[in-house]
Length: 554
Image (cartoon, rainbow, N blue to C red; front, side, top):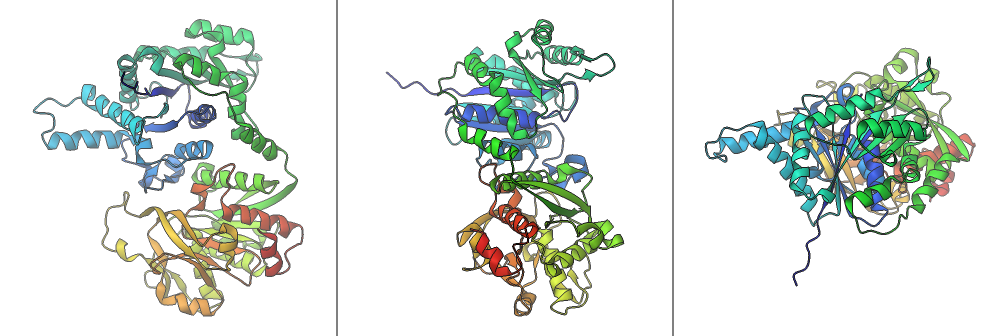
């Protein structure tokens, strides 16, 4: 008898009422629960915008760009997927309307449709379905694929995706697809009531498209009573036990625990007829307990220009949560505008912090404030971590104020600088397109033995994710090194500086890459964990010398 081929199950997560309800976190929590039952889970985000990817979008429009190992610039929700499920995604995990339409048009131009009139149905929807099934089958069939549809029901842009998943439900067996709809249950303080009508309208709009929700996840500020669940179930055509409350938590990492208490994982296993183990996520529960019960508290300053939009630094925020958990510390992030530092001076904003991070970014605005902030923490032995542009600012600051190169700068900000210690990478000089043309994705780095970097990573070879066009100018490497700046991480061919540090400082290190993209709740990134550890020691007065702080980090 031929061996039965394993069938992939599909879970489609949609949203209604309003945006920003947390579909990505809900989908990630679902994924974690199923993975914790021994299932092979994959995740996908379908974004309805026409951009090919978010790489050219302003952070105020879209938030952070999450870069994958293969160099794909993707939606920030993929960061949640990676952090919750603790595995690396690839370009197949994020599709956009721009990618779909581009593929169909390119195929049409090559005569791929044999003279047919190309239409949204079936050509666009078929392309969407083929992308979903490709992820499910590559490299081997998955047990479950969770597909999050961006936007909210009723958006014109998302209609082709909703139509595609409607068709998939017809093409697959009944027990092979599951629709989960996330909605809002607002609380009206004046009447003291939770209102279910927005959820009813959202489900109605979904049904008009041809999709029936099997499970409702209801974001609510208050617990849903049995009566409220029965009412929602009655008007939305689902059993009350399929109405799952999604309450605001102390931490997003508590949501899988809440969902399990609501028996959501049992419900999904039942609906999809999944053969799997009992839930085992004891390590996750222990991590959440440690996260909610810290023994220390430190203040870490983040000096940037997008501080009014926290989503621009989503992975950085989460990385500090992970690092805090590992160090049993509550990390309070102090958001400092680099432009205000230029106006008021660094001491006005940084005198009370225990550590400083200067993140990545683009453009000249706010650069001088970042350089002033780095000078302040360098001179005051305050722990420092620089990321991407943060490394470049640290090199500029050191060149100006220690190495004696007046007017040192990056050619990105001043192409007439007499000392361009940061300049455009050689392979970037003839590039004119903006989309997906930077140095993107994972690249290897060799670490200097005995350096702080080696002590933090506990290895001499690492791989980190990049997103940049500019680099340290090699003409200045020897000169800066003689003045005390150590280049402790270099590309294997010796051409690119990846990590700098100051041996004379208690904790001063920066990477040209983005370490925040690889941090996980139970595997915090070594640079973030090291910064928080150093901040705890700094606050406790335990780092008067570089030697003591290095000995304290294992």
